[in-house]
Length: 176
Length: 110
Image (cartoon, rainbow over the protein chains, first blue to last red):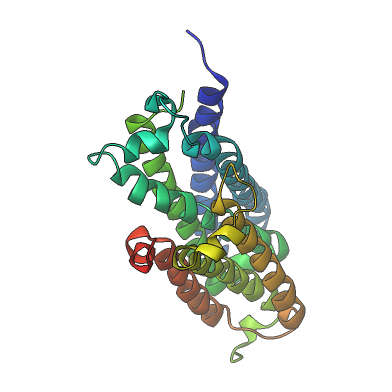
């Protein structure tokens, strides 16, 4: 039972960062949703703020790591051009495009995934910044809290699109 | 963009939100522009192993940070409606989603 370097980084990119991302999103969303004065004492809000900061900042940092590793480590292996006579199974993009039944995994799924994923760290960082800068004020201002929830959720949905297509593409054309 | 006491001093939050929307819209516009123009696509090929994605994402991040710095400087001490900032941000995100959607940008050629 062995891992190649490429398999290792593909697993880190998809499952390693993905698992932490999901945990951070769940914690951050629950934290934002319940960060209201009617649901906690002032001491309770201060304690929740620490967890809210952790959830939002971990999600933002993990999102940056995921897109950077994805774009600059995994993606070059995916899109590498095969030399003449090469086994296309070692070149996922070319392998998918060579089969019209699989080509859509590149022309639609990968093309959308590789771009839309970059929205996640941008949006998550904006929310994490607002939580850090405004802190307890989020509890007093439902408009501000709602805006954070909306953008935090859109950041997650963009990552969900990327993660879902990433899993399907890896199943159709694994990186060895 | 002013009309209630609870929006005061929230200019920093509005700047962060709108700038994130600008970053998303930039990503969508650059993705579509790279499809329309081969020369733009080549200009965005900052690192060959990753191809034009390196330039599209890199330039979108630069535009996001630059717009955030400018908006923060302009709005940080101003009363800016978070509700309106969120609306603008959602429109900009929609531009980004449409611009990065393959069925849309593939209408523009190569």
